[in-house]
Length: 251
Image (tube, rainbow, N blue to C red; front, side, top):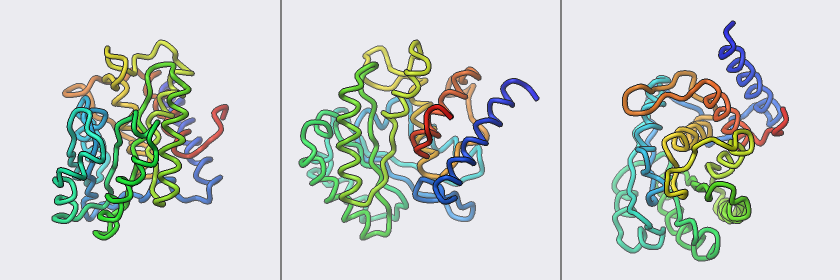
């Protein structure tokens, strides 16, 4: 077995351990179904569309024989309040069936105005549930090394998730774990705020694990997306596994 194969086998064992430790159920809302497409809608801002995250997620699913239709409604700097007031997202929720709807709040509002974020998340959640869907909350990453801000963002999203019985997509927590293991990793874009190309790969892994309860066996790269070095791929898979399965970091 190659070194890469051995590392991936170890990750498979880690996933198996985590599932067993948590009753055998996947951590996310569903396991993949091949017969009907999984319909996913993202509502947010630039954190949701940077580096074509929705397309990367859909392509990863397709490479692993999961039918996923991913759509996004997003504008630079938009808040959930702004999305609610302009009505486009709510109209789409009423017009089409969505299995999962990902809500992504402006980071400063999620961190500092949790009540405001929660109120508009609740309005969207009501529409999502009335159409038979499930609500996910995209916990965005803070700047590199800003653990204090990340802790505040994650705390706010966990509180909102508890109020709505929603599921958190813990991308920010995965960034922190990856940086702790590889401080020189270039997860952020040059602006130091948004995910860079590598960070979007990590975000896609976290979304995939949250939605489908597993990591993709096959990946897509070399065309639109830069291929991950083996070491970084293993790191990202481990980080995504740990934050979505709540495994001890030292396993």
